[in-house]
Amino acid sequence: MTPPPGHFAAEHLLRELAPQVLGALIRRYREFAAAEDAAQEALIAAATQWPREGVPDNPRAWLMQVASRRMVDYVRREAARRKRETVAAMQMDALAPPADAGMGTEEDDTLTLLFMCCHPALTPSSAIALTLRAVGGLTTAEIASAFLVPEATMAQRISRAKQTIKTSGVLFSFPADRERADRLRAVLHVLYLIFNEGYTSSAGPDLLRLELSGEAIRLTRALHALLPDDAEVAGLLALMLLTDARRSARTGPDGELISLTQQDRTRWDRTEIAEGTALLTAALAKGSVGAYQLQAAIAAVHDEAECAEDTDWPQILALYELLKRMSDNPMVMLNHAIAAAMVDGPAKGLELLAALDADKRLAGHHRLDAVRAHLLEMAGDPQAAIRHYRIAARKTTNLPERNYLTAQAARLSDGS
Image 1 (cartoon, rainbow, N blue to C red):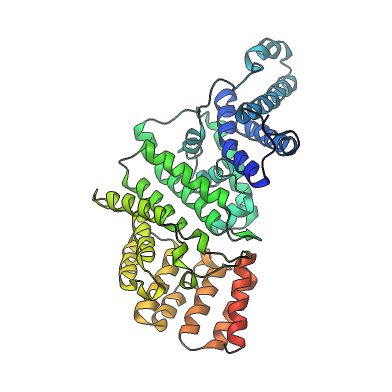
Image 2 (spheres, rainbow, N blue to C red; image 1 turned 135 degrees about the horizontal axis):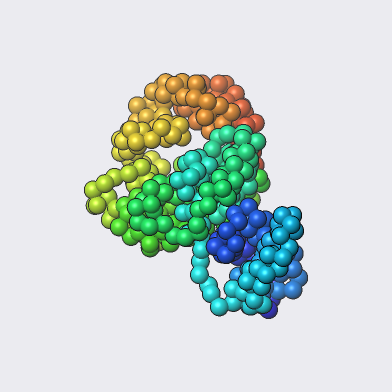
């Protein structure tokens, strides 16, 4: 046993190991829902015991052993319920793991689990939701926020996805080349959403959830290693790195949000920027430009500016024009309105925002009001800006964002 780690270190380790354990259980027992329950019980046991007793020398094997015992119990209960005690008794020895289960293998089933959750038997939205839950470890509320749907709707979607996986009889194995290509789009979107939730948490007292953004980068690196010639995989990894490079400058000493224009750019991670830029340059040279590469290019333009005033907004606007043709994402349209305002003036940006008012996907989302407040302030209408800053503050469930928006309203109210 090693000494007990700090809270963050233990939480990070468990988050990294969770999909590996779940994947191994599904591979062995072919029961998605039951495997998820067993993995969760093992994680709870670890979270309780490890801080007190220390981390085992092989934490993955420890989790597998505990979870496998739970699965054996599940198999026995199911056998009893179906009144097949005799057959079940004969199978128990084969199903039960040896005492050192998992000790001799360190195979990471995370990517296999990732592709399994994006199986064609599921709708794309259900596949993404299930993967965020099983691989990313996000709560149902966080996933609902990422999809801009009510939590109850998302809970039903995840439940149906688990049932579909169970009834489809899908094998837990890495897909062949053609099938893998079909599922890749959903896989990339999942990783994108996990990163976004880590970079700006949808709820809670902290702006950042480093374990999520870090896990998204780790998984995308693994995917890039597997598919080094795929330009969109490289583009997504570049986007994450170019964005994550600003992380340390996004919050102040008390965790308060610092806007992009006010950040100390000397604190940006130049190593991540260099790596992201190199990945993007190589991806663009392949000739097939996708949405993640365009978003990475936008992030690169921001990172290249030594100060906010040096930002090449015309180039960013041109990139968003291209991105709009590829994507019906309302957030892309929202960011396009900001870029248009920076190039053609706030009136143009406000005109573009008006077209988004009827988009149900943005109804109740704080960002629409926050952007409108910013553009109204630019347009010289402080009273309207104050009103929308306050509306946006009431809508957000992330405390640093709420405090920032409230502070913007107070600043205008004070006439400063």
